[in-house]
Length: 279
Image 1 (cartoon, one colour):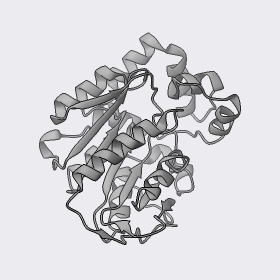
Image 2 (cartoon, rainbow, N blue to C red):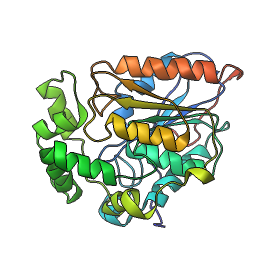
Image 3 (spheres, rainbow, N blue to C red):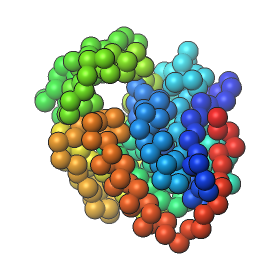
């Protein structure tokens, strides 16, 4: 594992009053960072009474490691999440998007959590089916992702195709393009072949599995693949793309998660949990 130099970036939103006893920890996908949760989801869940934290994995956002990104492994990302989890007084619910969904699955191999949410998650079988599907359906998007992997930029059209099925302004795309960053080539290979989750080893907390009808990266067929591997019924949102937390109808996704959390965690009492390493 890589020895990280310095603390991880953690974005935290807290309720104005008493917080739910169980906090939430959001794990971002490839090429992004904690910012993708802070636009809508963190304030939404804080307003609903949850302490909501999102970390930037090593080499992402404000976390150290960008200069040696390609040396970072999937296990390093798992270590990041476990380290942040240890900063909570109460184990958090883990909520992972895309690559973050696979990180959550790997965390479940070694930790029990109150609940887990997988959004447009890489399936336990890995990225291979996704890569083949992109080559066949969206070769331009695949080409742009490869360019990003090599440290290049991405076009606004490719960004729109990759993340959005609903209307998005050019200004917003430009702002997002400035934040999109390279991903670890080693992690991409780990998620494709070399370090796949092992469902038989996972702790099995209550789990919510969400997909998006118009997702070119993790299409509904791959969400179904995850559902079969983990024994969970999926919910697929119609007319929505891969960037579920950023889409125009993001609130539908957030509300579905909130309703499920409120029901799943109904036995928990209110308290004031905190992420000790949070901002």
